[in-house]
Length: 212
Picture 1 (cartoon, rainbow, N blue to C red):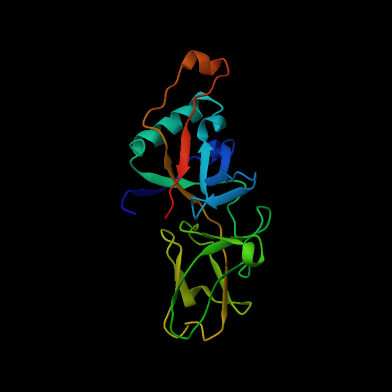
Picture 2 (spheres, rainbow, N blue to C red):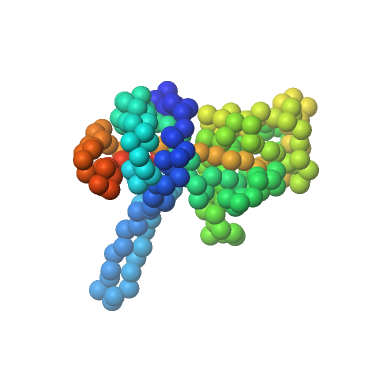
């Protein structure tokens, strides 16, 4: 993305923020009382309020500086969701067998990182486009591959195997990784009343996920 800065929002502020995924579901109630439900979005979209993580004037100044550098809503940036930022659970280190990202056919060399939520036919697959550089681990049929056999673009989440390392037919490709959420500010103005801030009132700083 040319309108995206590979910069991470201040971690100490993001740690105290509030937010999570949202979906849009259209519900029509029929004359019989039954419901017809339809998902208007194929993918969930995460929203956060960064203002809730601001605990002092220095943190607020850092957020304002970050906001100005992004030109408000113009440029996207990386956000660390402390609840959901690894291929496995938040308390465990990523393992190369955490997430299945594809099956080899002997010719395809590139595979997109993704993360599954749930199991079976109802599982939701989320595309991961902002892995943390140096954290991606890859396995073929459960056997971890050496780092030199593949590269992962931290700006897109695309894993590419080198010549001689392309997954053979039917080989299950899995990955482990840490990742950020691509987001942008959802406002072009941050209003701060310093007298109210010192009394405990915090500014609202909305952030919204950028869907690839």
